[in-house]
Image (cartoon, rainbow, N blue to C red; front, side):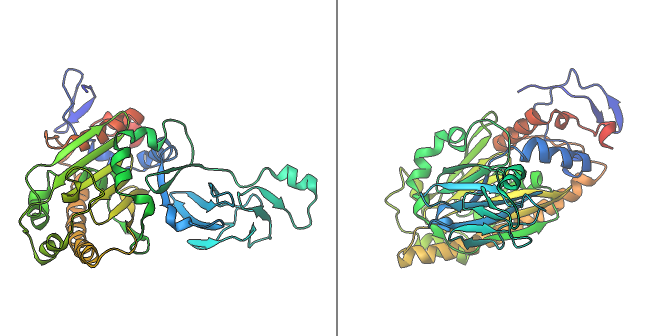
Length: 393
């Protein structure tokens, strides 16, 4: 994609109309700008699909989870007929949260703990203490519904907007995801949420390329062959990267322990029993696929230059001892990788805030970052501007 932009290069005004900016990264200023942060929440996140939970976490009718996402509160529940509903977890009366806790079970109705307004399991308004049928009618239909979709073993929600479903956007990978039997899996640990002093786009840029692995993750790099294959699509908004484990164990003790214990997983196609793969759905959802387990992580903004990192891993129940050992070893590998990435992205965030860096240059080894950049530009054209327009300063 060839685009043009107006830019300020080396602190001098320059007309970029005749210059190809196809290889430029997103501009540095959008990674720590209050107005851009405010606008991206509406233009990007209010219309995006997000993983709410795994289907096993609301396995029985009445099981529910709650979550907070930027300025929204949501509840997701399994109904009596086995279907799944999601609604805003904010009482119609005085805006108190109706469902409390991160997870729970509803036997019949939801009762707001503030004034005891009651709602049916699907969020429809049932009763108002001291109120008549007319009061119920005037109060409205109940807790506003949220779009839901079950795909690849996860419950996805979307607070607003239109556009293709998750299944439509990730259609190319449906068979592969199905082969991992994600819908049969169970969580390996509780949900992890951490606050990071980096912008969510910085986290995504880092995850979407393997270009930094050799230098930034030397131990991880020793586990794989040189090939790092990437398929990305800026229109559908995804990137898929995959790499093959070496036949001979390399790396530190955790890496060798993982590779020595990893058994052949017969239900995976082709050579995916020897691959780690990374599927990203823009703007901010990432699913890691390993033969022994899968995980997801989501990065979303809470302030300019600050993000929440939410993650969880899953595997099939009752795994053989070898699979358990390989999964534990993989956890040690990923802990080291995450610590390394934290250091890398913090340094990048500091550099983005400095005066010397206005944008970077994308190498041919970063197609996922390029697709993410183009996807962002399509939704926020100001992201083409190398320096912040006056309205954003």
